[in-house]
Image 1 (tube, one colour):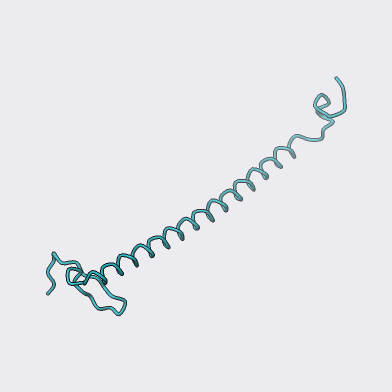
Image 2: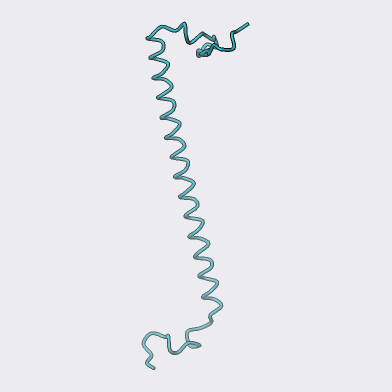
Length: 90
């Protein structure tokens, strides 16, 4: 039975070893692996967030364009607004 105060590292072969029993080189290698994996995961999350933001921006632009088109279609022809027609005076 394992001591509940102990912390174990699971090696890639599935064997658990007591961290207190690891030599200094093994500890260094383990720490380096943790740092590399953490950096990689952070980059993956940042890329996913960027993709989500790009998709969200495209969706918002599409909604804005659709609302603009609907508003314009409800306004009618320019002849209904003679004071705002380009090239025609007051």
